[in-house]
Length: 235
Image (tube, rainbow, N blue to C red; front, side, top):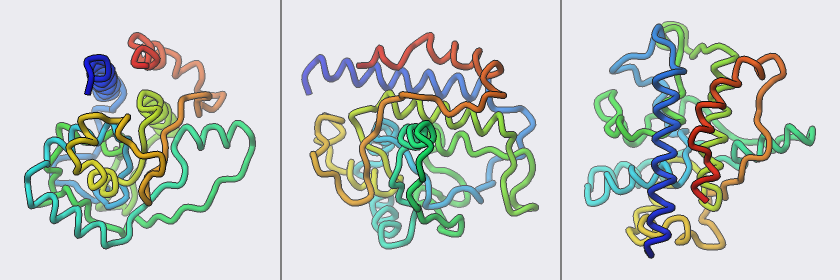
């Protein structure tokens, strides 16, 4: 990897950290029911960008227990997206129809879960960070968050994808197996082949935000915080 590519990669990772920090310091309510040992949402359905997967792949490299867990998960059903979040936003903008996707919350557990706890918690992807609930999922069998929080989650997911435009997106298991090759993590995203392996799809730049009219004023301060380090600075 040349110096220029390495610098771009560091900027993008710094922007990703910036987004995580804003979310956890300013967005996550203090009164969520989520706590250590609560792992009902830790399924095999987690998705993430390649940029988010880089740190995880580097963290678990050379640890055979992780490789075995991922290989085992690869033999089981899991959510494999056919659209990215920015693609979904574009479809909404055009008034188009969404492609069918198969997902079941019963597809558990996440291959990185150990003793009902996330084994990579400090570097977990945003899809895990934003899965919060105002009441106990164990008692009600489902998570509950406000419509505004769900909207903010969509916006953050769109920004994260935009930072990694040119990279790829997919299920956590597929992404980490794809990045097992150290050369791919070292030179990501230039190391991505033109034809992606099954289960992975290309990221798209942000063209339109998924924000309902009733939340546009309320979400403006959040967007201003995100744009203090605009994602375009990474390109």
